[in-house]
Image (cartoon, rainbow, N blue to C red; front, side, top):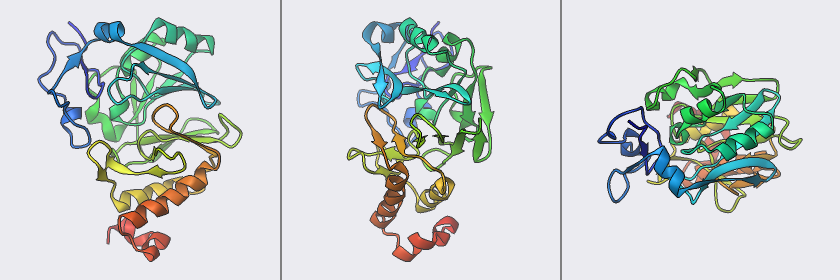
Length: 283
């Protein structure tokens, strides 16, 4: 009996004697089935072929797989006034990583941006003492390894403390979530958006996609709603989904400019961008 792990998206499934015939995460139009067909791995196989990369990424401790695996996200350790948060999850847990986290005070909760990064979230919770895993209830259907540690939250905001808020961004997934850390890791604050908005290669802008690998743009109404959600929130830095995909300094302005750039590129008229009213109503 194993917990099968999809080799393409990295999602870990419930305990079974044989792997499932299909991965619904990969068969969804936001993802894809690997070119060689559906393939599976296990914790033991992954541990034999990969290690965890544990290092600083612009002042934040990052953890990722080496060599890269599946979507190749990295998790981040955030020591906030809401407790120590592990932002995102990975397909592999190691004693070295757990030890590194415990040396920094341990982890109080895990928060994950969207289903593509659920990975082996239950393994991580178990290894860290059964800490809660916060997921948005709109993405409940994508939990393929249920566990009592998983706690669903609803609405557009979950305030964890005076300085930390989870924001339901939507657009990419219905429950796509960003974490806003008002006072850290640097004094100007930071946004950790997962894929709800993605830091692009120039590291001066973000962009917005319903599907990144299949290049399906995010709907204008969803982008406009996301803009309203972020309006007035202060953050100097934006930490993207993987290593080095960060905007360090003037992040809020970069995001605001990116909203305009994206909407212009998909043909939204200037007056509609300014008002936002037609975009939100879809008219």
